[in-house]
Length: 438
Image 1 (cartoon, rainbow, N blue to C red):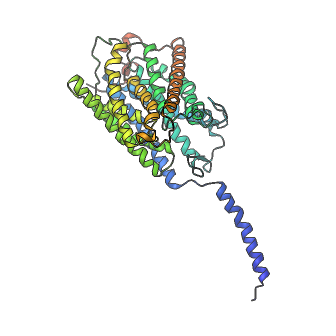
Image 2 (image 1 turned 90 degrees about the vertical axis):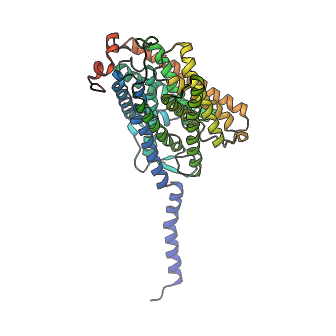
Image 3 (image 1 turned 60 degrees about the horizontal axis):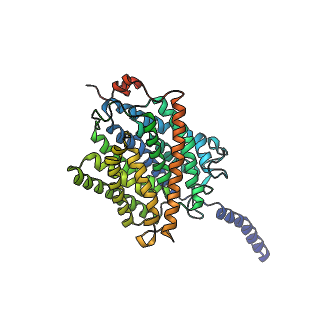
């Protein structure tokens, strides 16, 4: 059979007409890379492990045995409740709409998101599934609120903790997350650097913990009766899980499994190690004995300090941040707390707020090329001012919102149980259970 030249040209033209639109469509709609998707799923699981069981054990081991279940319960339920609220309205208000401080409800109950809907990353043309992004960000919102409850642990009613969690998530966490991480946000447009949540998570939660501690008041017997941690192995296990999970927290914030993730991973690794060493040797020098609680607290201080800067500094800068945070947070917990007389049960302010402030501001220093940084900072002074603005905004917003929220709770359902219940312990009085049977 003889095929004419005109027939071949016509067939080729038809084939091109069919393929070209498909090629253009493929270029216009990038497909998520399976490696990026897999890494983000793993990162999300790691951050979940930071909260349950990591934070639960870290906090639970530090309280007295009569309150261990109350703290475990608070972390578990707050984390779960906020995860649900993130899906209902949190994601929509934080990451959708044109507003500077708050979004809209276009994604209410995740409306419009399907398995084929994608979210942008920091690289043009690279995306991940939006459901994966929603899940990853949910862990940040839920964990941050759970962190704050450590400031007023052992003397706050369970109902008051839950009411605080809902209101604070809505009026403090969501606006600050949007301001820092969303393209329309106030601090994002200003140029504030916060790779994984120094302001959004740690300063925000640390200030809430301090304000909550002041408004709830001191524990019965605080300052006159000993209140040592009841289970230091819990503390060590929880801190170790937090360290491991933090790699998902920091490295996952890049949203991609690429070469840059290696730098973020190493920075997170060495800053934490430096924080442990700084607190341990500092405590050994000042108090004569290095403690397990101190070493674990140093790890958290290093982790908190590197969180805003893990994508901006080099390994040397990360080590310096860990050392500075370990020593300054040691001073805050050992001296500043006694000097000011506040009862921050689990040192949320002394570790998270103090190290978070240091990390956020010093990002403007160690992120500069002169100190081995990779953030492309042209003027250290200008960037430090921008970072300080972000810190000031977070401290003010979180402090005011927390004060208002605790005032509302105090005059509605009340903040504290009776002194008799507090002396008995919240485990049996509020939950009808005991952590240990003797």
